Image 1 (spheres, helix red, strand yellow):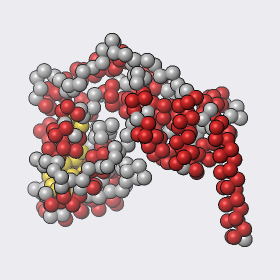
Image 2 (image 1 turned 90 degrees about the vertical axis):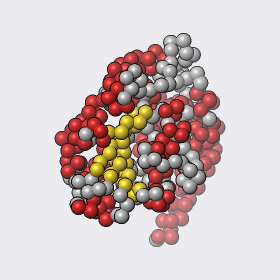
Image 3 (image 1 turned 60 degrees about the vertical axis):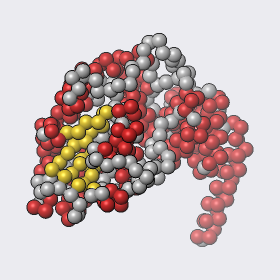
Image 4 (image 1 turned 90 degrees about the horizontal axis):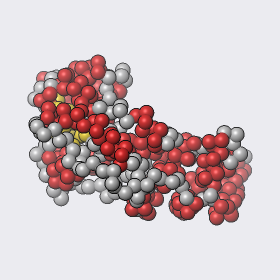
Length: 382
């Protein structure tokens, strides 16, 4: 490891819901320009949604016992002539306490800096709930999920574990808040840590990575998860993201996932934890980690009433227009769900079925077309 002694590894570990996917895609797009400026960002794969687990996922696997790719990454780091290495994966954020030391041993004599972005907890929890629906097939309602999870995300405890192993002086904390981003974006803020400016040399993502749904799209996906659509979740996720972007988020107002009172409760619960981080890691004696104002009880808000007939018709119409296969598949599972003995499944299917009534003929045509294609393939094979 002698060749790596003077190298610096910037290990970005999240935290969750702080733009990690967008950052990883940005860094991947700009590997060459980063290399020219002295920074090595090892490559990694992205899925159809341009989301990945980052190039440091193999380190998370390494400390769990899957060492092959991790050893390959360490070898690449040692052999590169660049002295600064950027690694990123949220999967490292929740590394078990006893394994953080193992990670340090794996990285050997290199100088390690741990980068952690933190998002205000009410906003983070709202985004995390969306992710559970979008990507993990959850069908739990927001109020139920929140009551079980809102006290489980204390960042100061996690940060202290990393500081004990790597040293407090090597922990870099950045608030995930636009008004605190150096240069105004997450990309410029990230580059600022390396004394780099977001110039025109860098390529920016053309679209938002892993954007939030409109609230109608989120509820539709929750209901689809009840049916469920396990094998088509990623494709449906992409369609609902595109639908949300097409229709715009302004249609959500005044509906929000969380009431102002609940946001205030969550912010109050985490206030002292956040103040401890602000004082210890950012040198802010006033204890202010986040600057955006917390909503007050006077803020207009209405609980989401559920999918209207028009909302579900808009969603199904969008799917029908853009993807015949997904349209046909969800029509099948909705039809099947209407005859289910499970009351929850039957109710979800009944709500979603309102969107298909004006497309019944289209569904029959597509079903017949698909059957003919399959029949033709059988005949050819015979």
